[in-house]
Length: 467
Image (cartoon, rainbow, N blue to C red; front, top):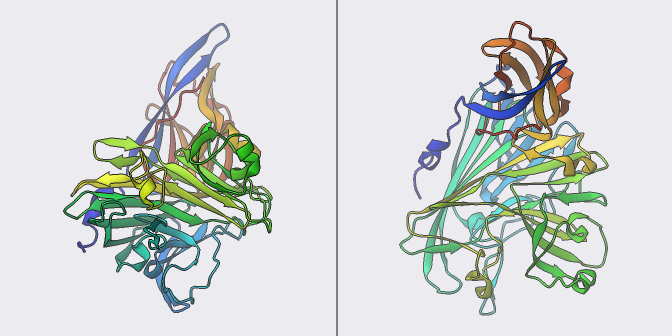
């Protein structure tokens, strides 16, 4: 076991200046001129009215040591001893829990138990070798963890790490992996950021799969819940009792057109039917349209030695529930017949690492019908109509539609002069609500900046150009 923190020191949060580029359109009486407008997303650590806008605390409940991270938008519960990181995400803006919990925490953890929440599964989720079942969900929940917590003015964090040995299902050789996870929450934000580090600390190459196995259920699992991910193709990994798809020529594992209603609609029933698909995408959402509420999973690139890859948003949909499974591979089992197949595993040489980030962000007020209109999803906000600017007769007007997952403040500037400011809140936001802004003293200025101050600065973003 290595000492705590050094593996993640380069992930420390700082005040970042993020540049967003877009085109702007200047419309005059007799001419239309295209300008360049620069938008900046700035993480400046917005001041809070009180010292406890984000809290982290350790409590003892149901015979477990529990860590709670709480702000005015959500409360999340972490249980390191059973590797539920997190076990719970309670969205205060709607009063709904976003994970299901089939078993009480008081259930003894003898082997794998269905406590619910998120269970990170590595080097496999399941598998059978020579008629013997591999440990369900891998080794993290049975490995000894070291962890610590901390807090800044506007954030609270948990960091835990462990190591484990396992035998390769094909070669039988022993491999050793180090696993580290940092979870960060921010004040005035629904964002929960999860940074992952997997390192080969053994002496031989190490193959593995990984799944962020997430037992989701927006206000419990009931009819009307849905899964959505952008894309045109999906990899059908597994299905059971789906004769209508078999008649269409779908025989897993195979690629198929996306979306498939069998994987996007939760329809409870006594007859057991299920399907598992992977959609290569950096985001997905599970939601309940009765409440216009959704939990977004937003992933960065999978960083591997010498290359990057895209996350695969896995969905296991059945008649009894559904599981979101972000994964860097197209397989999550240790069966020998899959282990050596292309894109089924990640292979790391000794000392090499795999890193990625998955963010959770809850939204209210976004109906399912709006999802196909989404242009881009960032951890901080969602773009529905790309931002732009018009200038006419000395007046400036911003246009575009976005949704924010937390509180912040928009600031429009020309050069160094502040033209307008407006507070933003969780939910949909029409940029034109900033109104017409007098800019006669700025013209013919061709550089404008639109600033968003938040307590959740995460990464540099590039906004798409407006038409």
